[in-house]
Length: 345
Image (cartoon, rainbow, N blue to C red):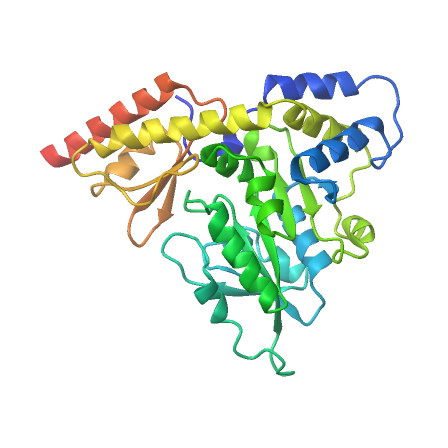
């Protein structure tokens, strides 16, 4: 049985492998000066709007650190949810490598609101305090929830009214857009987002993300910062080829929609099991749940997944572009058996 630990565990989509193989012919100019990168940048403009400027990078942490370096000066900070990936899962890179302080906000569902942003706007203009510059949200969030376009518009308007920028950590942006049945632009450009870290790795790429800047007034020197942040690929055509495969057709949407559907199927199945409580709305490709004592440990002997919150025992199950209905059903059956055994003592 495949694990349900992370969509990073999934392999590379065959169409992406084929695109890499096709690009692996003869020589091509290095450092992104190749036709695949040019086509990828064109496709990113098609999806995010004609003003979009993009820089391909290796991974999500690199995209986020580059974004913060491009948007902030050394005395400025980023407001984010306490559970944000940039805060809990990037090894302190935004602060250690980017030099950007994070100002965190506790949230029940991983989502910021204008009111929670305001908690860090109390010392604006005070030279003794770091100054907020960016509001960073994750779409979809680390808790599997997502922002409606109207919620992002409200956040963008609020940020702009206070001289701030809105950044979207979109490592699972495709899952959010597929779940909302909208375009990538509808949940970013069209609602006033200024910058996006657009993810591909969790959606079937071998490894590739993109920083996309949507505001012409920001991001001076990003080309130099990408190199300085160790994110300039010498053989850039292989990043470009992956994004061409992802964005030229509907692969980004079909892969994300499938992962979402498998998570929804799993949630429906486990909600019927006595003793299992689904703790978050299932709006992307993640299911969060509480299990009876000892059940998670019993299941983890055979199937990999993470305990999300050690204090409560809450677990996280992730579905991927290659998760099958049979795998979901078999896992749900195994959960039911383990819960039954725990009840029986």
